[in-house]
Image 1: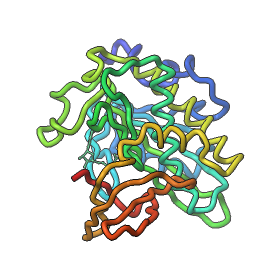
Image 2 (image 1 turned 180 degrees about the horizontal axis):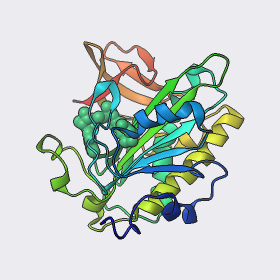
Image 3 (image 1 turned 120 degrees about the horizontal axis):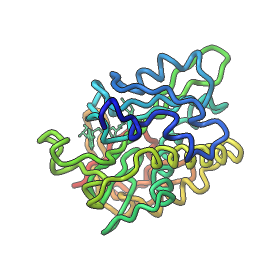
Image 4 (image 1 turned 90 degrees about the vertical axis):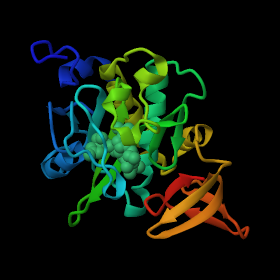
Length: 274
Ligand code: BT5
């Protein structure tokens, strides 16, 4: 993509044609470069309506969870943040991350992208894997103001057309993209719109029913972790466990070595494969 020809960019006009949403992505604030779309969304949330989306072709300070870095090179990925203002109590907010992962799965189906091998899986609660390597992640953040619905920022990062050379050496063996896995460049504009289409639908289901419904079905069926032995990492502690299932609220149900069953809420732990 060069600046004279903008037809490949993620500007609003290139995405709108694929959108079927009522409110999500109807306003896209577009940047060629930004520190982090989540940081920008936090700045904009107080004066933006629910549904506004921040997109940048590149992030210079893309963020993962717990202060980790998210590598976001120019023009090869989808780096976007959704501004939501749900009437939900705070314990119901982490589930918006699972909706993000499920929306990415549905979007890829809807875009007709076929992946060889085991395809797209979800490593609870926020990682999108392709054939066992990480291709995306979700970062949900919240800011509270008095007597108003919380401002929730759902940041979605997806490596679409990244090539191996786009990843630093430290990620070469663990990161992948749709282009690497399928051998062909994919349409970022359509994928972006399909994520927004799927997100809005799953989000409205959740708000109306209070249940995760289809999100839970997808996160279970496409789980990278159910049935596996993992290390639960919290702060400094590490605990071996076997993952049995996801509960109705999207929590992880883990069996510890002594046979006790524990449910784990997202945000509390990271999972590491042994
Ligand atoms: C995540 O964190 O996976 C959440 C990533 C969210 C990124 C989006 S992009 C739009 C929005 N704006 C932001 O600033 N962020 C959001 P976590 O589970 O903590 O994983 C971070 C780890 O993934 C890093 O420590 C690396 O090991 C690895 N990583 C970093 N960049 C990667 C990439 N592009 N592809 C695959 N793995 C990556």
